[in-house]
Image (cartoon, rainbow, N blue to C red; front, side, top):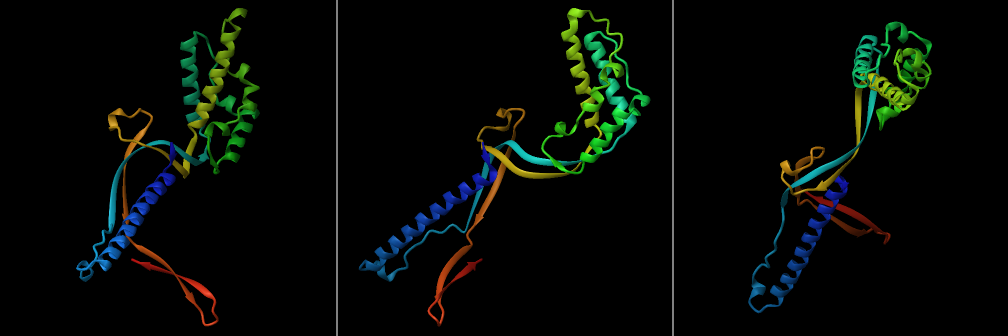
Length: 238
């Protein structure tokens, strides 16, 4: 897995080396023509590459990106998602869980969490999960959510698992209130790939990279000033 920019630089270097080899061969041929008894009257042939087009299959392995989010509290939306998740947990573990109400959302602990999330939005982040701090709400989880579980003492491990899943449900419900407002792409990591699209793993994206390298000459010459100092001049031939 390499950066796309590094891969393109590699292709460019290889083509430059190919042209360099051809230019050296052209010089060798020109010298041969100049010294030949009859060929010296002919123009020495030179192979050029005005344009090179490449169609390269690559596999996008990973994206290094950051996203800026806007957090906006929507109580109806939050209640719908959290209570739906709690209902799923009830069916999964055969327990009874107290659902969230708007009264719960008005509690100080919940409001503190909302204020923290609002304060943290509109900044570029790598991972949305790291933004959601449930410290304040976790203090109230036992009385807010778990009620009449009818668990025996030996089922304490199961109880711990349920509490963790409730926290996950809370975190996921908050994530539904985030809206991406901007994305900053830092790097694209690829794997040069020749397999067909159907052979690629489901979590990979196979694309065809169309690259065209055009022959635009760049020449650096040195010029002497009247005072004898040298200056460099860059000439672009497009």
